[in-house]
View 1: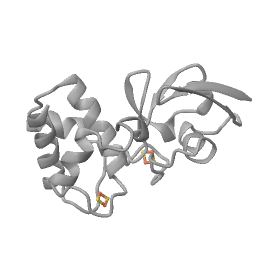
View 2: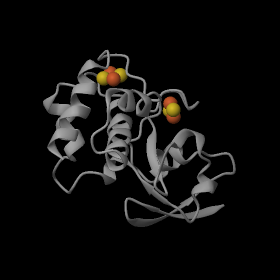
View 3: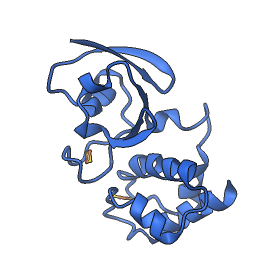
View 4: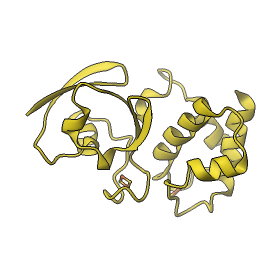
Length: 152
Ligand code: FES
Ligand code: FES
């Protein structure tokens, strides 16, 4: 079946099969590899995108469900040739090690700060509970969130 969706402000079309996830369409068909595929089970958050204003795991959304809807991926956050403030804060705070979790975290943090510009540590913890990082121990990630919030 053919679906039409808006991705990062651009109208895109894709031919999908019934069981195909939004994540595979984004990565493999629409050539947007920023959203990572680590678990494909909704456990790690590496595939986080915003669907009609809601943070979702793209691996848990059927591509067909996104037909006619609006998706923002990590590629859609930054201005051309630059970094989104959350990305810059991750760099400045040293919150990126292997980087596999980073795109999902950046999308989740940007979403958090849109809703809650000065989040408490508990709010940060709650918001990022679905994003797994195997490298950093989360301390630097929390630093990055606080830095991005301070700079807003
Ligand atoms: S790949 Fe989607 S939550 Fe892990
Ligand atoms: S930086 Fe490696 S998984 Fe988070």
